Image 1: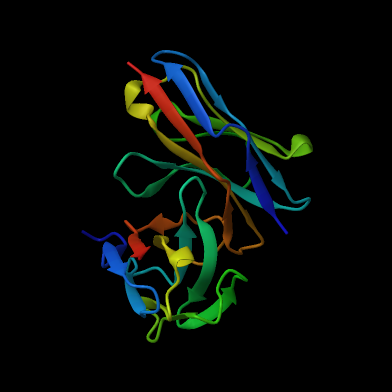
Image 2: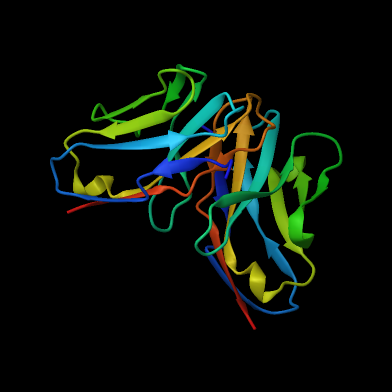
Length: 112
Length: 114
């Protein structure tokens, strides 16, 4: 069965620090990959997605993620975080037009 | 607002009671998903529909759980004989058919079983 592993459960950073959140998935075939974000008190929303082409994808609010097929990874990055990035981040994978499997999430706290 | 809506937003019930939740997807979306989320976990897939057909059910969905989407529009999720372990946030999402399409999530229904 497919699974998604997020390396960090809780990350605390100061504003302007660089961010990288790790995500690995277990499936050897073609996948679609997503990062969703949930800001405090808000719905889950899509941050970015990869389904083909350039393995470096850019999303909203300056986030980007790199798909490395050989490592089964899809890490999320942002060069300089802001206090407003405080949220919970979920990596997710979709296989063969099927349901999406989510990781357990990483709670990011940015200190002002 | 043309997003996904869920009703009620909160539900407190006593163990053994039945509860029903409703989800209204984005109107042009033919897929509708139900997830459950507990503290410290990501959303866990329960079931999904394409139009009115229920295409897959998770093993998490015991016999006490049933979901319907009778006309391919709104959906209901019913839990019979609730247990304390059913306490969770129940999320609904909708999308167009196709794995690369984004799922749009509703605000969720928080169930507390006392």
